[in-house]
Length: 170
Image (cartoon, rainbow, N blue to C red; front, side):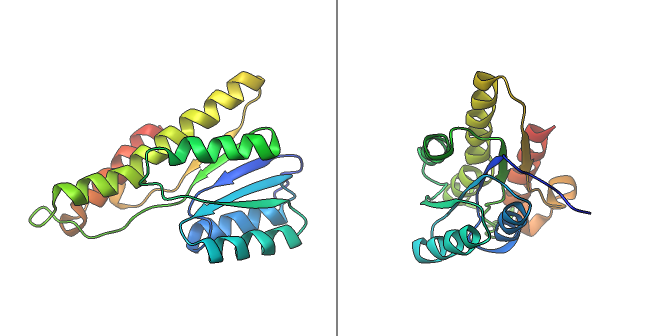
């Protein structure tokens, strides 16, 4: 199956490695008109942006730590300033730290929810606002986990974050 995204602009979080990186590459190979890739590792991010640009899709890297409450607005603004819009958002970034019922701390809870639920929410908010302002639809893809549905005692907080994201997605 071939997917064509000619003329579409996408913002992909967690796109310097793993699932996010694979999704960004698929978008680039599918003819996207522009990509914003993001992650915490500047050297890796610049390399990914250069590789994807060589595939024919203009790609920029914006370093961001999604634990920072300002990061979603910064990323959305950068995408809109560079490419004029956000047609697609992929929330692929996520923390998978272990935090069980017995050993989770307030810091674990705050860190996991910041990256896995709060940042995706505010990125969705920004993308939806842009789509509504332009009167154009778009697509939002949130990467979930089986733990959103069944949980896991040793991943209690992570499971709760993915459950929250699943509910927001619905």
